[in-house]
Image (cartoon, rainbow, N blue to C red; front, top):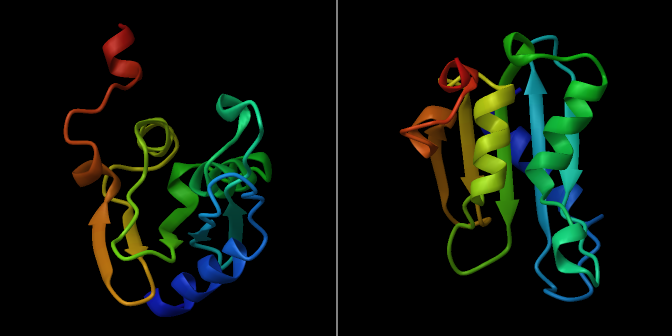
Length: 132
């Protein structure tokens, strides 16, 4: 699967976003090495902290289906906006925990695409090693 195909799947996932407050749909797609793709979208709630971001939904879908960091090949995170919408801190922490630091991450707003890695997004990650 190409980077653009994964981005297109993430944009399709954003169509399912539940965003009655921000009106800012986000989509995400996690590509696994076996070719499977797990999608996610942001889901808001009137009690704002109860909502969840699209990339966490996608990665949690993969994990709940038995995938682990070794299975994840790439992640696309998209939103229609004037600029690229980057992952929040909570999502970065989840990606650090559940992916490898060299996992590619593609951000796109439909006009511009930026490729980075989980590690580049979180240069000083807090991990299980810090708990020892």
